[in-house]
Image (cartoon, rainbow, N blue to C red; front, side, top):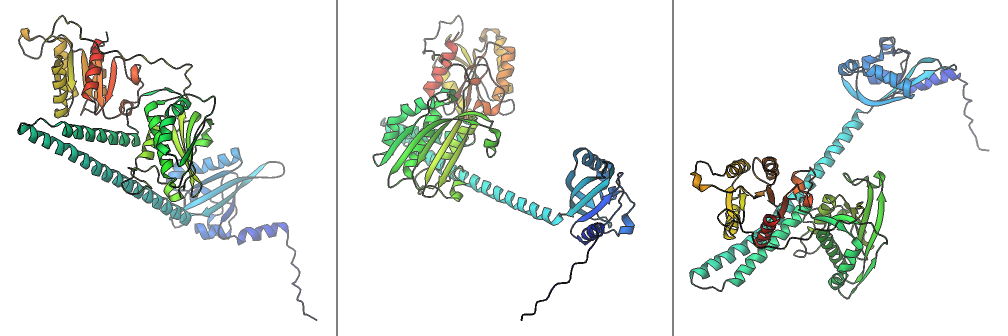
Length: 551
């Protein structure tokens, strides 16, 4: 028969002694009791081990002894007890002191203790030393920050390297074309049109690249207007069909009714076309691309991963494909500049970063759902336009012949050109003088204000009275001037000359330099217009003519 050993019966222990043994046996937590005023009344082995005091050294002393001098001066011990009484519990983390004066990072819980009648008998205090855990968390946070910084620097490196490469190629094309034009003209040859066309094409490509970079940086000049995404999809449908080819099935699922949005229509169309082309490239063996629209009302919880995006109503444009999909590591990098999954030489890697920048600059955002073998869906969210009705766009004034002036050299108005880049200023002055305008110029805002004052007084500095100049009708200024910038110059000028018209020339969105809302066209102030650099000479001429002929 098998010998079975029976464990001795457990010796009965009173509830009070059992609890005391339990508390005294805990060595990883300091567990002790305070009286209603905060004086220590009990002390366990964990408290002695953590704080360095024997029971007879600390019992009878106030628990504020464990706080740092600065915390005691700030009244933190008293606030801890008050919070425990008012809220039923006090929880916190912070520095605490050992007997030898060294600090440790503590997690503290204080609970009020009441008897059967509800009378306060004191507080139970539990403290844990989490210094090592805090160090580990700090090390992890620092490692994550270093990784994020390294990834950011890698993205910046890719960005600058890619921009330098592309712009050097474009500068080469422009430089070589100008050299050949110069050589042929010097030799008496006039067959320079092909080289002029090449240089112009390179300039156009450089402008496109700059717009993409500005979109990524959320600094592109946008012209938002009320738009219907469904109408934009239908209007582009034939072009989208030609873009995907016969091997890919193109479908659309458009929500009705769909909320209107307020955004740059050209950017929306460009985004849709690029997304469809990306979807096509992700399906080398064919498949399907679906363009969808939908309404979405988003709460703060829905935007937890979209910092800076306001909750509210959005219209959503989605391009969904049945292609190869993306693994998580690729999906995490798709918005980085110059990051692309396409083979070298196919794609700039700016498409999705440009889309991201455009969406954020428009008050929206982009989300991508993708998995290997299950395709990709890109969702462009744009804020709903809550305006009661679409504003009727004012027709662009037709170029009109200049009015017959009462005074002035050509009588078509006086223009002050303010541009710190000498070559650009020279070209602008050349165009305006060639068109018969009286032109003044300045390289900075301070000089420009002086010229405005002189012109308004009817003279330029110490010149004889016979050289009177008419007041300035139009101020043409770069936004990014040194010192007094273009916006500040315009505000100062219009403060003294309210009827002065202002034309901004800038490579940045006007709102990117000043967030104050305007009350005029394009969100600018009264009598203000804007053109984005590089601007075509004919477009510049037309804008000046329009502004000077408009009352």
